[in-house]
Image (cartoon, rainbow, N blue to C red; front, side, top):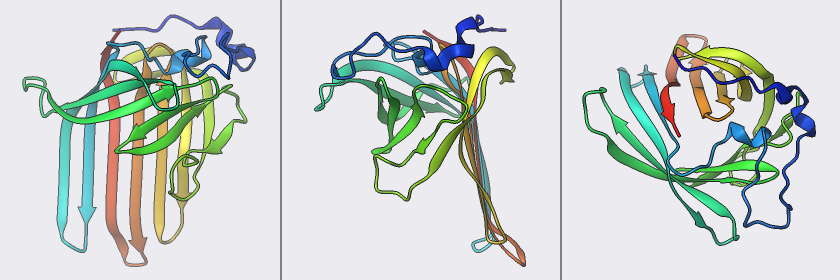
Length: 225
């Protein structure tokens, strides 16, 4: 079982800054805070994924269980003169199957935030410094409705997928529940590893019960640098 070494200085992480100049876009920031989002070429994480969907309108109920792998395949300079990670994403139905590439995403680690482009839509996943009162619009770079992200449970021990992590942070992306809809989204990160857990729940309901439901869970299985 893997275990992340303690990051003792994370308790004062809000005061840790990068040695890079914000005006120098061609530099990847370094430091303990930024280790929550590794960018080195060859870094990879394998996730166990479960997707459960139910649609009372069509009568369809589906459960999809598989593995997904995300690899930092290379780094290139984008049109803003920033180091940009090419993220290759693979899928296999069982550990005995061969990996099949499904998507190519990109990410940027800057002195102020982590930008990740998923299906050509950019999101701000993390902001720096990482503080207990940190909140931001995760959709500030796209045309979707504003969505306030906020930090929770900073630098806390957690066990995800049977793996112990001495320090993790949680990003609450959505927590909404009324008589019509329920939406809950979180992501968890660990230093030196990156994203270790993702949960995305959406429920459409009415007084007669649940009409539509989508539950997506992504749990780290292993990683390597």
